[in-house]
Image (cartoon, rainbow, N blue to C red; front, top):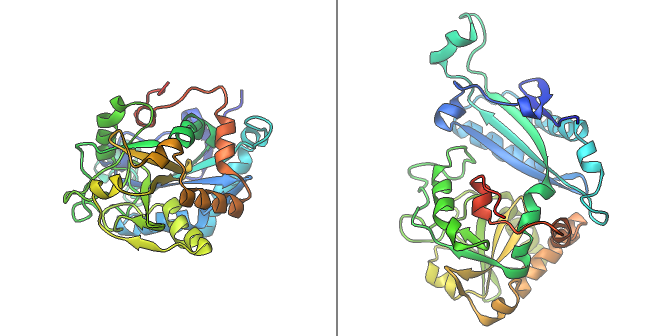
Length: 339
């Protein structure tokens, strides 16, 4: 069977052969940045915003920006076209397969090992490693459809968020061991558990690859944006959907006590857009969310998002999930099947 094609530094190669060198800075230090975007109806969603954030991350980490935004967009479009056969069919008749694209940039091989690469002093060195690959989005999302029926249980692990004064969280980087520790600490809490990290002062921050939003008095409440990644899905809700719906947005510090007393809550991320959350450490916020994890404001956000992109994304994910085992999100992120 023909393999998907992956872009690495000017070449298109089989996905199974795509790799970084053992002396690459990303492998040695976790020294790299990345972005993950998706399509709706085969049209890339927020791709330019993702690339702009990638460039901001590279600038902050002093990784040379060797491509223009237009060049990266063109490569993403080419990656989709080269692999289009994996997305032209339906993941089941009614709703189309979608594309998840991953843009990964590392600083490149470390100079101390340059002799391994047989480079002379006149040759280029310290060029970043660019990797762009695609994946069927249904394979990421279908095992998580059960969250739309039962809601997510936000579990607070002992692992704390690394504060931005120690490591800048607004850089979407590959140094993610603290995320994995949080995943390890909640994996035994069941298939509906999702980690929710606190900062060093005990305030809510984010999950391991997703942001957290709660609804209070009909208003959107998010943590202060200082100690977490400003996720594209969260910012789309705050900057696009909230004005469309006339919803007030408040950024503030809040604690588990506030989450336990909120009206609604959700996790947001590219692979699912949003997941309703109705519990904290196993306890339901209120009886209404026990009966239906998707509250009225969350439903309005889902409906507006679906309208904007021309796809009822919750129905799409549920359709992908038919006859597919339920996944434990943390186990999936750790490499297990989650079945």
